[in-house]
Structures are given as C-alpha cells and as structure tokens.
Image 1 (cartoon, chains in turn purple, blue):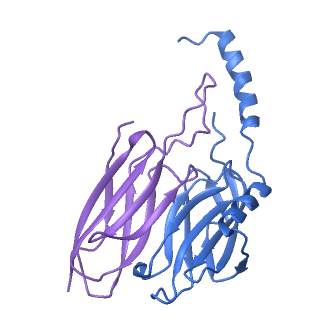
Image 2: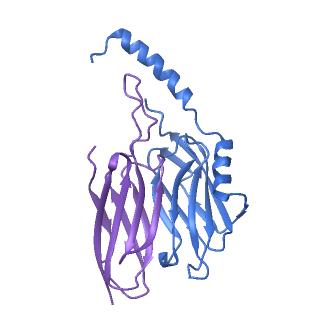
Image 3: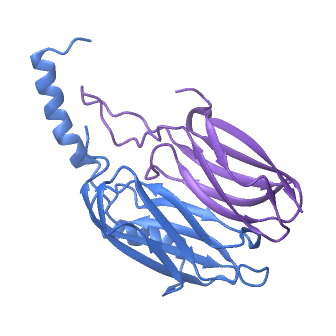
Length: 109
Length: 147
C-alpha cells in the first residue's frame, strides 16, 4: 500500500457567519485490522490510519483517534461553525508512514 | 510458494487454532477500557444517543451515529466522545475530540463489529463529567471471521 491515498471532502463552498457546516470526509484505505490471516495461516500485519485532524485557518477544530475497528475507507461526518473565510485543512496519518492531506476553501458572508 | 496438500492441511490446522489465540474481548476487557477512559470517575446515563441499526447484515461496515445533547458553547461543550464495543477483539473503536467550534455534538462514521453485542458511547463534557449511552445490535455476518 502506498504511503498516501485518495481523499474526498464534501462541504459547502460558501456559508453565512455562524452557520453550522456539515463536512463529510472519506479517505481510501484498507484499514487492515491485524486480525486477518492469509490462506497459509500467516497473520496480515496491522496497517491502519491512526489519526485525523481538521484545522480551520490553522486552529484545530476536530480530531479523531482511529482504532482497528474502523471500517475500510474511513468515512467521518462532522460539523464545524463558520467563523471567517479561509481554508480548512484535513490531515490523516497512520502506520508505515502513511500521511495524506487536502484543503478546502470556505467563503463566509 | 505452491500450496501442496500437506502445507494446506497444516495451515488449515494453524488457522483453526489462531483465532482462539486472539480471542474476542470479553465484557471485562471493555469495562477495563471504559475505566481507563473514566480514570476513576463515574459516568451518568443519559444525554448520549448512539444509533446503530438493530440488525446488521455485514459487520464489516456498520453506520453508526453518535450525538450528545449539549449547547456547544464556550461555557458548556462536549470535549470527547469514545466508542467502546464489548464484543470486538479490541474494545476501543474510535475517539472524537470536539470543541465549542463544532457547533453540534454529532458525528457519523462506519465501524466494524465482530459479534452481536452492546456498543457503548462515553462522552466527557468540558466540566469533566461523563455521560454514557449504548445500543445493542445483532450482527449476522461478523467482521474478523474471515481467515
């Protein structure tokens, strides 16, 4: 598995000040639990995303700690309040040096 | 490596033994995990709503929604939400860290369930108090059973 992967972020591009935004994030990842075995009985080593962070103009607003019980291609739907125009950065990190990030711009009126 | 009849028989025997070694977490282990989260405090029942389908066909991808009754202001907000599954090999499922800027204390995600079980959600408020809610579910095809 590569050290990075595809991410999809769905959120509105514009919002009114004080509005609560719903953000849906999906990241492509097998989330290998470490409990599965190959056909020869060898255990497949754990390889999961451990951490997700969302920063809004550099301020952390949401964080998630992931464990092996998260489904493959982790989907997380969360909310944040629109305070000012700027960028939201989404960062994932995990086992074997996995890291991926993406940004979205938000215009607040 | 080609799989001969002998290696197949050996590996099948090994595979049948291995799941017994990584036995599923017991309710005790889940309680320990919860105690670690609570760190000596106790959780009150209420305010936390955990939504999981009562009948799950495939435990590999179960949509779960957790929400906490809270105004989410600087003075009163939910700091963390932990999800603990009693019937999974590892009791911890996921932890969400929120802030007053979250607006609403509601998160949706997809989790794996290893067995029919009770899933617990524990939320810590900014004043340090804990609240909990749970949901029981029946899983027909469990995650982690495939070899």
